[in-house]
Length: 218
Image 1 (cartoon, rainbow, N blue to C red):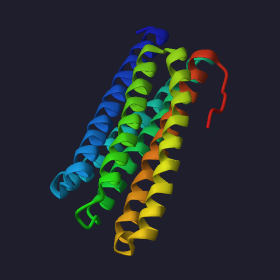
Image 2: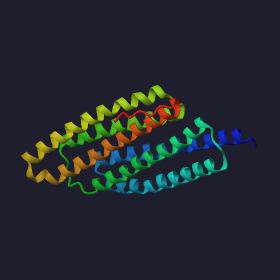
Image 3: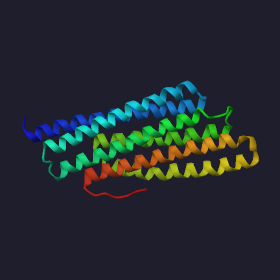
Image 4: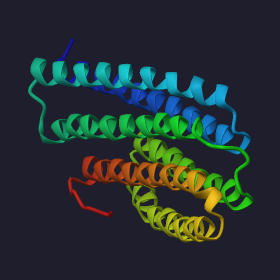
């Protein structure tokens, strides 16, 4: 088989696997949202085990990228494709880690949560989910405009996170018995905010792959 044809076929396979990796993480994030709202400990534990699948996919894609670089002599644009994929799967894997981290914090909640927390955390998680879905779509479609738009969405997540911090601090001052849950809520919110940062990082690498320019948006 011609090396260029082989390269294109290998890249199609890698792109499909990244889309599948993203789909697993989207499912994990859905579970995180449900487990947070319902305080479903069993669902949280099931979601923790999903991180093993994400880790295995990252390792597999990384190995194939390295073999691709060793077997062929990629041109500039092709090399950019491979380097971008290596960066993207690292950030995807970190998002998967944060889903696991949040589930571990969910297991530490002392029910019931305050209504403000029940409302604010899912709102942030929904924004992050929208970012993640649009990020995967922009990667599959090589859509630079969509990737740039996702980078801008990070500001909305930051604003929600900052407001949650202020509200939780107020609750903890007024209700000392709530301090434990307040710490849990802030920790969960921080992981969600980091997920949005990782989605932004991925979009920066998509923009680099498509345009050849690496710009920092967060």
